[in-house]
Image 1 (tube, rainbow, N blue to C red):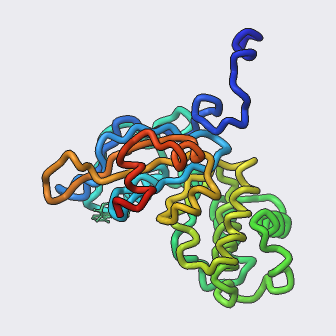
Image 2 (image 1 turned 135 degrees about the vertical axis):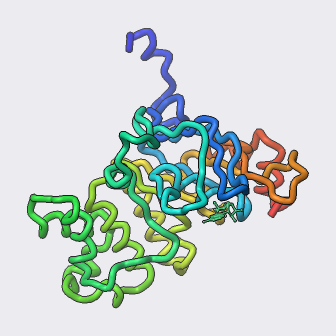
Length: 278
Ligand code: ADP
C-alpha cells in the first residue's frame, strides 16, 4: 500500500469490512431444504478479528447461513445451495475442499452446551488428538482452558466429568474444546440461550477477549446481546415481497452495529429492532 493510500485509510478500529480484511464471504448464496427456499441471494463479507452478529426473526435463516460457513449443512440430506462461499479467498464448497479440514479452521459452538461424557481434560484434548496434535497436550489443555476463562474454576477438577460442571462452565468448556484445535474463526449459534445472565455475561466478556485473535460470528435472537457484543450486525428478514406461503430469508442490512441500532438504513431493520416485526 502506498503512503498516499495509507493516509486515506480510515482508522483501523472502524469495524467495517472496508477497513478490515474479509475472512468469510457469501456471494449470491441461496439455500433450499428440499423444495423450500431458506435463504435467497445473500451477499455478505465478514471482517476478520471482529464480532459479527446475525439477527432477525425466527426462521429467517440465521443458523442456516452460519452453518454454510463450515459446511455443517452438508450433513442434512435435503440441503442444496447455489452461489459462492469463500474462506480466506478460497472456495468453501468444491470437490477439492476437505470439510473436516475446513471445520478445523472454522470451529463451531452450539446453542446447548454439549460436552462429551468424558473428563474436562479429555473434552479439551479430544479435537487436538484426533487432528494428530503432537505437542505437549497438558500445555495445550491448560492454554485452551485459560483462553476460555475457565482454568481457575477447573484446574483441580481436570479429571472429573465435564458433565459435572455448571451450564455456563460447560459452554466455556465447549469453547475451550474449539480453541484447542486452533481455529481462525469461531461460529456461535445462540451460545448463551441456555445460560443464566451471569454465565451469559462471562461468555460475552470472553468473546470480547477472543476477538483479538479470532473472528467470531454469532447468531443471536437477543438484540441487546448483538448490541453489546458485536462490531457488525447483519439483519436477516423473511422476504416480504414474496406472496408464497413460505418466504425465504434475505439480508435486509449489514452495518456497523452502532449504526444499525441507531440509524438503520433499511425500513425492515427498523421495524425489527423496534419490535414491529417479530
Ligand atoms: P433461524 O436460525 O433464523 O431461526 P433456520 O436457519 O434455523 O432459521 O431456518 C431457516 C428455514 O429453514 C426455516 O424455514 C426452517 O424451518 C428451515 N430449516 C432449517 N433447518 C432445516 C432442516 N434441517 N430441514 C428442513 N428445513 C430446515
